[in-house]
Image (cartoon, rainbow, N blue to C red; front, side, top):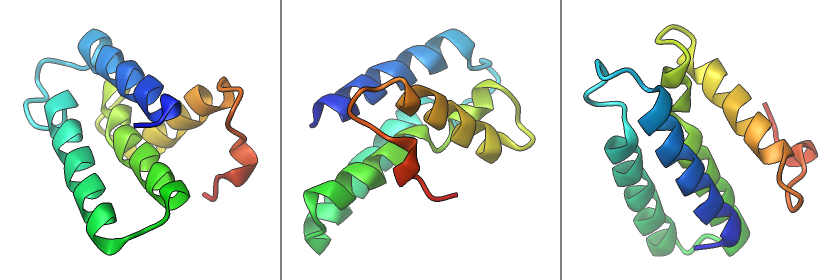
Length: 99
């Protein structure tokens, strides 16, 4: 696991713990972790590059974080949360993001 992915995992864990409504019994940290594990497994099987795998895992870790803000438009909120987090990282440039 790269340093960035480790930071994201920790961030998402605390975000869900601190801000996610208890009403969400499916879209939570455990769901996200299972999706990350599945995506990582498939990436290994498909032989994608390390860089592409990191991009994939970043997207997967953040994919449901918008539920901490709102049910409606949670996808857009997830993007905003991801960009906000990533722009604060010294080893990441949002110029590499495609919306």
